[in-house]
Length: 190
Ligand SMILES: NC(=O)c1ccc[n+]([C@@H]2O[C@H](COP(=O)([O-])OP(=O)(O)OC[C@H]3O[C@@H](n4cnc5c(N)ncnc54)[C@H](OP(=O)(O)O)[C@@H]3O)[C@@H](O)[C@H]2O)c1
Image 1: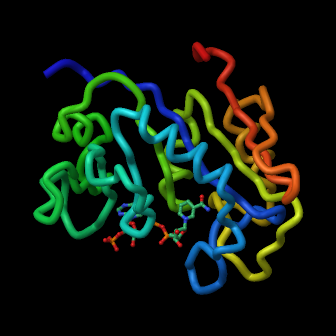
Image 2 (image 1 turned 135 degrees about the vertical axis):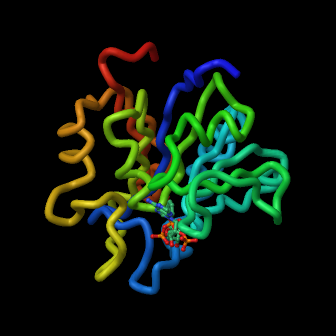
């Protein structure tokens, strides 16, 4: 099979203080906004492969139809998921992302990286675009930072330090002050 050549796009919604989950490691209802959920769902419908850690399944109406790679240390390298024929289990300590994509049967198109924090961190130097949604009026005290390095640095500082640049901003929910910014790699085609 051909060497995979996927466009890599990241998706997250963070609170104003950079959190993606609360102190119990769950995404609180206060961080769920209809317009952002719709944006996220539409993007995943257009992706060819979804990539996430064990606890970041997106749970949407069309989730079962999507090919996905799930990170876990329960396998040594890559293996089929016995519970989901569309999923491949991947341990990055034993196999490359390209190995996982090949095993998943996806070698072109868009890979959507959807978390959690360590998974976002692994792809920092590879994103073509990172879609950063943020709820600017919401704080989650003692929450879980969206990327490794938060809260010492902001999400924006981290994306910039990996060569991404803020491009277009779309207001998703003006009442709750939620927007999404496309952080693009200058060398990538939009
Ligand atoms: N706000 C948002 O947009 C957003 C986005 C994503 C997630 N979240 C929330 O964040 C929380 C989940 O966070 P989480 O920290 O538990 O993240 P997670 O990455 O979804 O799950 C962690 C698990 O994934 C596997 N994993 C992660 N990195 C790995 C690596 N490098 N190598 C091998 N396996 C790896 C491990 O599974 P095993 O234990 O099986 O080895 C690990 O226990 C949930 O509440 C979720 O809803 C929110």
